Length: 227
Image (cartoon, rainbow, N blue to C red; front, side, top):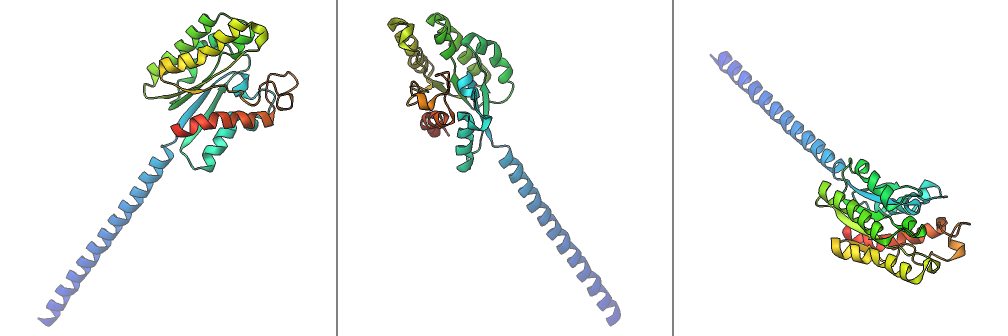
């Protein structure tokens, strides 16, 4: 009788132990699953900043790591901000060329769109109305594809030898477009760099590595609040 009772208690104890181990295993699985989910969520949280522009954005004559978008990425990484910079700059790009290229770049998600186009239009003396139309078309396409995107527009200027009226009309392109489309404006991308020989390459147009550091500061001052 005692032996049977002892055996019954022993079996019952084993059952409780088994249930306890199973519950512990389940809790461990839940913990691991939760950790995996957190890791997956964290890695999936990075947002894209697309810099779309000319040789100024591409970093003409510089190592890719010296171009101002790369310097912006370094700043972002140093602050552990969840953003990935995409350099969509192309040397020689006009607003018309950008209009033909933008759809391909919009195949990837874009959360912040930095538009730096128009400088080559100005240097070629292309009609201001044409540049405005092309830039607006690019803006509209980005808005249509990503309605919640944040916009930054880089202001540009042309040398006075293009004519006073043309230079004035061209300069006004950027604040006018920024106001119309609720974009954040960088008043002049080449501020503190343009026209300063020691900060520009031999062509007098493209910044040196030191010059691009200043461009990065000009951009960061406007971009930082959006992050």
